[in-house]
Length: 361
Image (cartoon, rainbow, N blue to C red; front, side, top):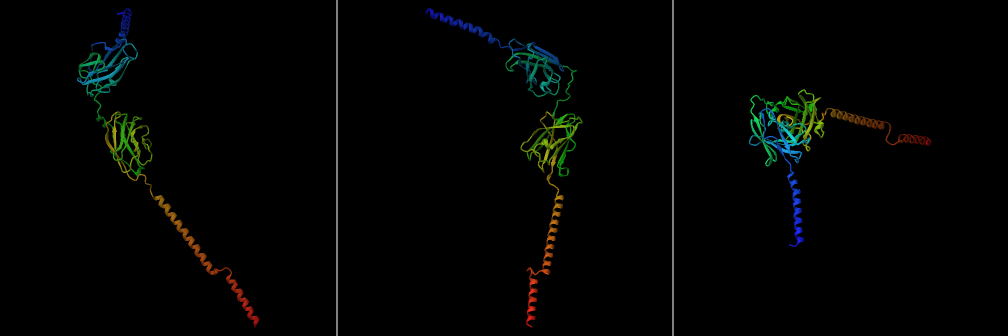
């Protein structure tokens, strides 16, 4: 090999070595989070703290997972190191864990935060069972570190949630009567009394499958008297439920949804009345709004009177006209022959004739 070529090969090799040495730290710089302990322990009803530690090059956020499908409790969330100290401490309240929304029993300690908390297993009806629950940080299937959450049995622990919320709580919302009528006698208004029970809000659905009318109202017991009256003016020609629906003084309502192609209640149609708790999608049919026919018919008493008066006036006018014509005709027959001056001319002719005869004699 010629000396110049050998020098070029050596130089190229040296450059590659330098590039490789500078690249290696970059590949190793991918930081991660890990648990500060292998096991985190607490009793049923306790709030158990779980701390994550970040390496120097780790990002501010990290995903973590508590539990598994096999244990009947699994929740995912994202932790953020808001103050940049490299640590995030999570707090799990085992007295409510698994029974309510994940964001209410899982939080961060201090200035850090937890977001996107999601429980993927079904809600449980009692305290979290005693046992071991796996902890993972990073990807669920390819975690950067693992640990264990140990929940120990505590016979003296009491569940602050007396009963897991169910759709049966809709029974606390009820009507005083099951049939409400919007009729012409009350100007087409139907009054729907609603009992809030222990709730401060409720949703009222007015729907008719026959016409497609479907309007949902969110009611608020603003004056805290436990009840309200929803008044529906079925005879109104307004286009928006906001304009023909009102609630009792002191209470509030909002139109949550409505069928834009059918915004008015139809006469002669029965509309289902359904109630639901705020936040629930399951409604219970508890009443009927009966919209009677002919709501917008106007009583005919006044127009009939006006029409009769008009006919009488016309008859009087006709009678007067006929009387005047008759009088005129009678006068003409007694004073005139119909040819102006004809009577006077005959008299003159008679006088001339008499004078002529006298002269002849």
